[in-house]
Length: 548
Image (tube, rainbow, N blue to C red; front, side, top):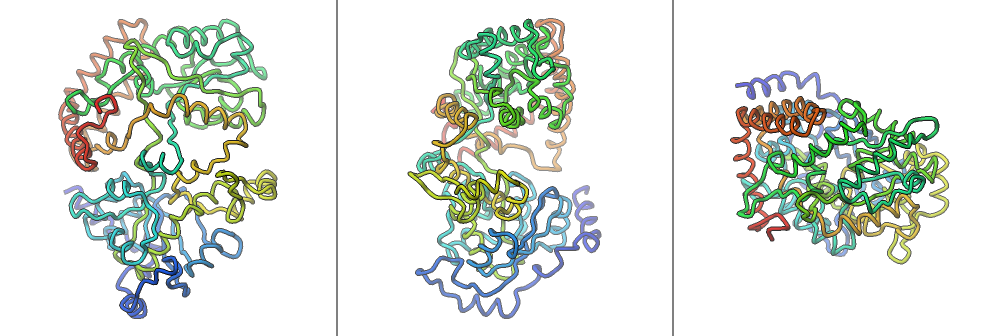
């Protein structure tokens, strides 16, 4: 009933909210478009986007209200490149997830739509007939669309088997390595190189729990300051990443999905954080600080060490202000079991999904446009100086000096002239990594490369098989999951701040028991069902490297 009322309300609100999307893309194809498609014959001597370059406007809705997109061929060289090569003018409309729901409820989706790949909205659009199958469109109109077969397989609709969504930042491990790319991880430990040298701390000593804490203790005992600030020895609250470092498994030997919170390494990670907290090696603000404060602390040099790369955003700003103040990767810690760490990569399932609506006025032109967007040049130019802004030298993308000078002089003006965020939405990051100019990277970039080669390559798992297990939005289990997550958020600080390890352990056990009473057992069973389906889809008996 609640779902029905929500959709009804969405329909009632549509007239007020559809400003900017209009009905131009919705509705049947125009007579001219129908005639063109009826007479269309693919010419293999030309790329798909040059089969028809007559002027056409396609409407593209992006359901990220923070996004900034404006098609401007006169002032933006990428937009000019798109128009010159395809004949397409893009009319972007930016909106929220709520506005997307309205468009869905009123069958008013425009030509092209972008939203989260791992969302119930994407599945609803597929299952409700609101989208055109990309596999069929690509076969007929855009056979040069460059998308890994693994992406098509992973995002194939469970009901009809069709592939609908072009997903940016998708990684298939085999495809990635075959193309010369690599997969990163955010599960990394960092520490300030200058402070380690100042205090005689060996980075290798920080690969044990005892050595890591000893290094933090030394920073505290010495009262290290930087630019007049007392340096905080450690910030971080990523229990799951620490549990991975300590050897946690995510699949049982008989192939069942394991709940991380139930694993002994998870408790081990909590007790590790409890020890850091009880010794005064961190700050109470770890439980409340937002991204802005955390970045401010890191970029100002007020932090010695931390876990999770994206948790330490700001280390680049610090480095560019003071190249001696480099936060370097210090490796992964070994846990009590002594088992090898298997860590999460950057999400292999990708980010934004771009789809062609069933209302699309000209599916051939839309498919050809998306095929154009999958070409390596589109992703490379976003990162390496814009269209015609780089050269390939010995397999590396090297930004032309004049473009680098422009970017350095005024990054905002450079981005406005040479880049479009639509490139980011559809980016195939494997190309970016395959052509990365490693020979010219600064010390910050070289450290990340070295860390990845030593601590990430060969130590990661394909996380999309494990993460696409959430219950359907609006279901009873989704409500239970939200309640459990909220309760855990309440209990987590209490466990970390416990007076003794024994008290922390008791609180942890009580918390698990309470979450079980709230429905975690049923939630675990559902997620295991989804996990088994994911393995079946990928033709796997086991998904965990230690089981394979």
